[in-house]
Length: 297
Image (cartoon, rainbow, N blue to C red; front, side, top):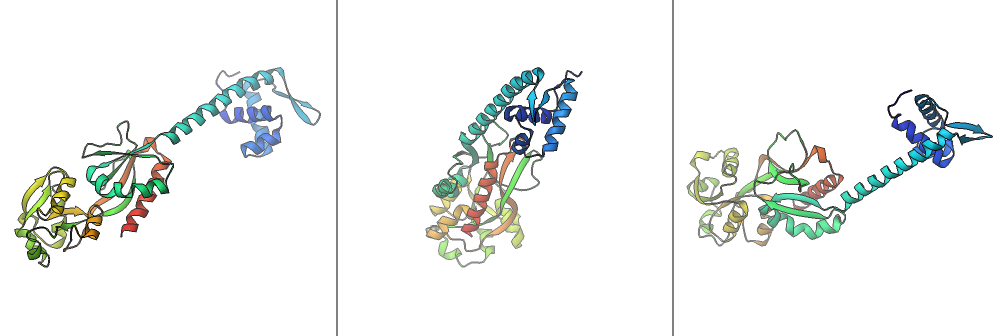
């Protein structure tokens, strides 16, 4: 006789049969055949070395050993069902904490929060802003929305949402606006460009595919974060480089213009979450984000 626990499938078949007092009903509840349940009951009896049922007319009757196991298995499975229900409920009730940069939060996400809450009312999204210090591996963060270049980390499930498109923008309030608005791209080589220290490769990433010598770029006022850079552009302080989604509303409203258009970079706007913490809500959110980004096109 083995002292190891019997196979779980055999215990499930027994618990259902004993609770329902019917092999047929147990098979229906477990979505298997009558024969499959009968085989699992035989496996269990052989494992334990005792009979659990005896024939009683056309039905079955539990032996004394069967009664003992019924009581124990019923209690164990009921506790398991209860804990699983609690865990499922606590996951459903907990907010989904999404990290993203302050610029992405302020300029893209917040204007769309009302629509997201209406479309995904059960998500209970909580947004956590940060600049370069957000990591979905740390406790308290479920996922990260970020512009980044592949290859992706091996421990991350990554939903690619859209290719990044960046371009120079300036305000009609900028003193050089009339001079630059119809000038060729090469005019930017002699312009002191607004830039951000958090992403120094942004201007070269835009210039190189256009045949401009990135080494010839001249930099003017620098800002620690993209949000401040874009605020400076709106205030008319100069020409800035920006991801298209983050200035879309400013372009529509005429606060900014993009005379030279936008170019794709190797980066993607992507939703990252740890593989160990796969959450069905992330897939829902990723699809909503894709639809929203397409809607803006």
